[in-house]
Image (cartoon, rainbow, N blue to C red):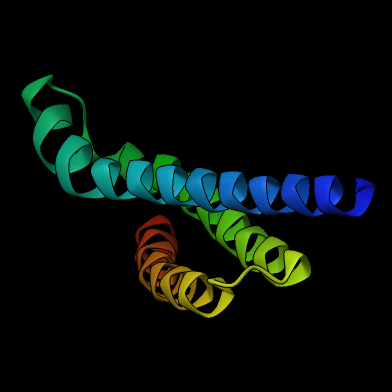
Length: 107
């Protein structure tokens, strides 16, 4: 019985980690495609701060996506392949944004 409870807790934790990683990744995308190009200029804020804000958020999002993959595999969740595929796609997109941010910071 205690094995079932710990397995359920592990599955809930894995699901929560996946949700957290998707929310953080979504925040990074909202910053990149809405806040930075549209809202900051409307508020008169210079565009030079975007890479400085986007880079740490992108790196945090990548960390949580990797953590999500790890948690799903550790819990042996039945959707681990699907979740891993989604996370890997999001990580690739985030890596592109991180590369752009680094390029902006170095130029």
